[in-house]
Figure 1 (cartoon, rainbow, N blue to C red):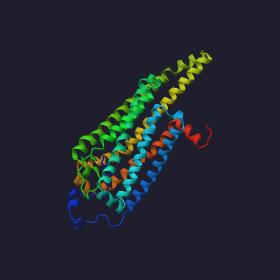
Figure 2: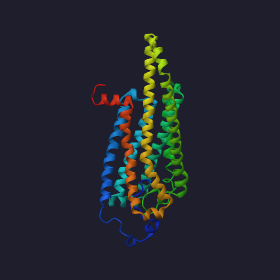
Figure 3: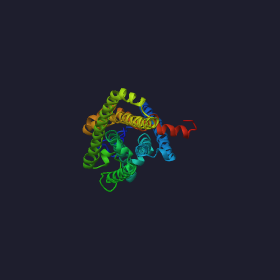
Figure 4: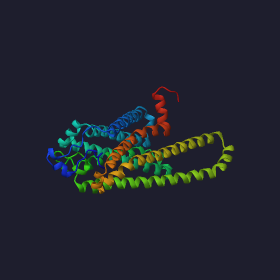
Length: 342
């Protein structure tokens, strides 16, 4: 949770030195900086377009508005907010005007960090919520037909956003150590107890719970897959003697189970992409948090840190493609929206 620490970050000692004593770190723009900005522009554009399309389709087609898709739309909203945060990050990190603006305006800095923490926490918590929903759907299939499931999911989404907004607003209310000229990142702006005991611990708990839930989900899905193949021969012989009405019911049940399996696989792909994109950034960030002097002394590490942020931003642009490819309801809605026959 470094709030995308700028590569131009100076140490606390340098921030306290007079302006003429601080070494000039900007100089000419390096090639890797140009590459990072170009990659950010591509990833942010894809994320904004893809997630905006998912949200638009969700609200346009009423048949998409079930409990599972509510969580997917909520994830797209968090990814869209994250993309906008990255857009602001690029403007205040790689452009001198933006950098001067953010280090000289207290509440602009605090609001920016607040938006970053809200989007990242909501994204992580929602991934965990989708995992919980899928585990329940696999372990307790009758819950899926509960008419109150959607209301419970919407209540969960509302509570999550409200709690996250309040929880992350403490620095705006005074839990900060902002000073003029200090780089705008949570390492230097937020109080250490709040950063470690609130943000870092919360992120760690959510990531561990999400991993455990998806391991459980994968094992349950594998167990059902093995059991389904074992009973397949007997089910085929039973279908031969069934009536046309029972065939219709069995076909509907089979279709529902197939859709459920596709959604479960979609979630596992989403979570896999999430961890693949997030872990490099989190590992380098934790290293910088635990070994700040060694981190600053290694220029290659700082450069690699910037590229891990591009990788993290790419997660938001990947999710819409996963939804469109693995979720049959979204796939049909996209075809209808763009005038193609289903």
